[in-house]
Amino acid sequence: LVNHNAYLASSSAPQIAYALLDQQSPEYSPSEAGLVVPVFQKGDDPINAINHMMSFLTSVVASRYPVTNNKLRTSLNPRQQATINNGRVTIQPI
Image (tube, rainbow, N blue to C red):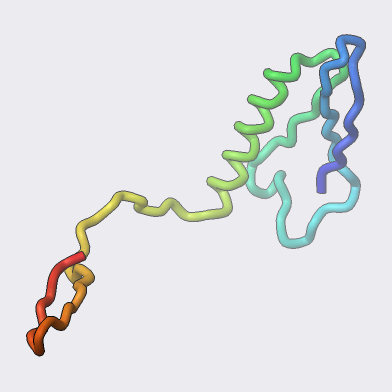
């Protein structure tokens, strides 16, 4: 678990401090996954801190979920629409 403590710096820019808590989830441990939880200080650049957190979150997701193939493919079974006109059925692809 990560403790999130928000505070305002003298420049009024919101910054976040992240600290590791003593209690860890039994099902997931960042140290077992080879992940280092970033800890940010009051003087850190907010944009740099966000970039580091995004990198950390990307590492967490990549370590927990398999890669998927998201390429679009042409269906081998396209949907069709049937129209009935004067007793005749006309089938058209949608």
